[in-house]
Length: 127
Ligand code: HEM
Image (cartoon, rainbow, N blue to C red; front, side, top):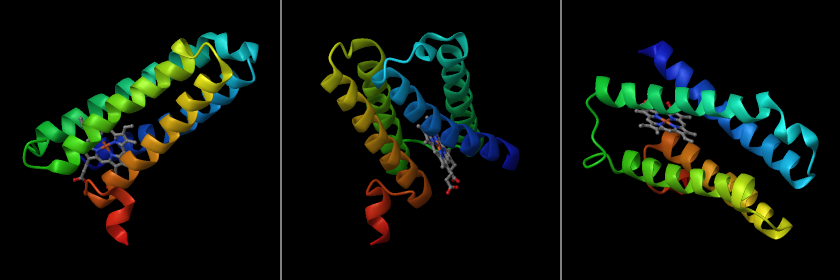
């Protein structure tokens, strides 16, 4: 179980770094944004992140109904995916791509804060 959590945490930080790097490539309209690795690696990392998270949820029998931090994480994950789509696919103007990048980074920070604090208030619960 420890290894699964380590994999989850590794993928959690890898997705964040990947999101920012991809966002920079998109905003600079760098040709590397269309490279096979740039397109496929994030899918692999995000699949590992989701499955390792789901396996921990099943193993520890945690429910989003009673554990509100988990529910907050799942809802925020939908926004993270949405901002990613705005940045990569739907952002047909520079301002929209920036909104996708900055919105995604903000939501990502919220999720990491929720994961560490186990609170819907994320990093604000430490204040
Ligand atoms: C962008 C998405 C996600 C990020 C950035 C993320 C990040 C993290 C981090 C950093 C931890 C370690 C927290 C700690 O031990 O201090 C963690 C733990 C965990 N995450 Fe995620 N996570 C994400 C998505 C998910 C999803 C989709 C699920 C469930 C389906 C999930 C379920 C869990 C569980 C069960 C733990 C272990 C909590 C515990 O130690 O009791 N995570 N996550």
